[in-house]
Amino acid sequence: MLIIVPFVLVYLIYIFKFTIKSYREMHRLQSVMKSPILTHLSESYAGNSTIRAFNSREQFHERNYKDINELLLCY
Image (cartoon, rainbow, N blue to C red):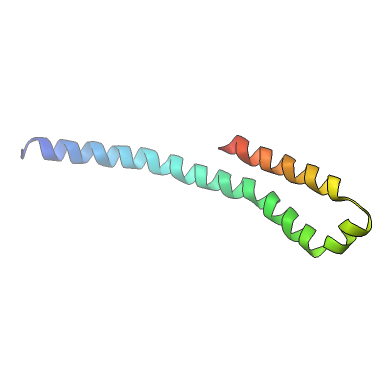
């Protein structure tokens, strides 16, 4: 037991160092991909009356679907 445990711990630390870099990169990608969606929604919420006045709902939906599809590609 005393011989095996240190090797297992060293291996687990190696795996942790390897996976934490991947986890950070995936988290960064998710943040970058969510940013356009959140920006578009906040701008649309602020200009909701303008979207209704010019009957631009379809344009809003197309842009929203495009942004969501790009986010799904990240996953």
